[in-house]
Image (cartoon, rainbow, N blue to C red; front, side, top):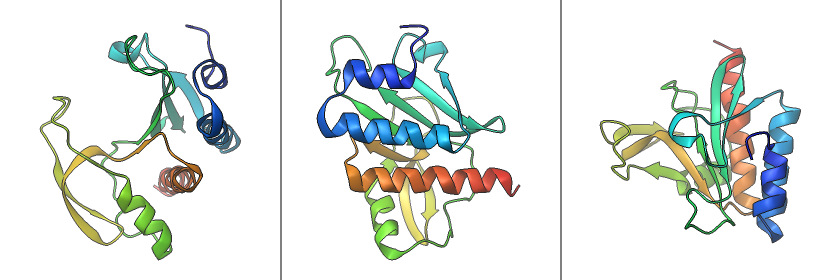
Length: 161
């Protein structure tokens, strides 16, 4: 598994619509010029990936089981935790805003940070938001459009610094 690609993980672990959605997302990352790297440290032996652009984090994603005793048909996408305000006031339509708001990642007290924060997300205030801000669990076709937009917004934020 150490030399696997995200595409190989999709083929190995995912099926049905989830496989198609994950394939679409990975293809979009590659077409957008992202560098995809296997996770290290805690994530080293998992199907965890990091997408970066110009050396800056864009998003993180898991394809397959998080641990050996979990369902292998798992696909999760997290936004970066860069702390920039790229999502605060971006110009997006109301339907997409609603989709983003449905995927806000609320703090689960995992211990990786000091707890959730108050954040403004596309003009709406949320309390107890995780440092990664967005999380897409086994996204469907509609949610993957939101995740793709998230990647585009973050890339634009990187390029316009």
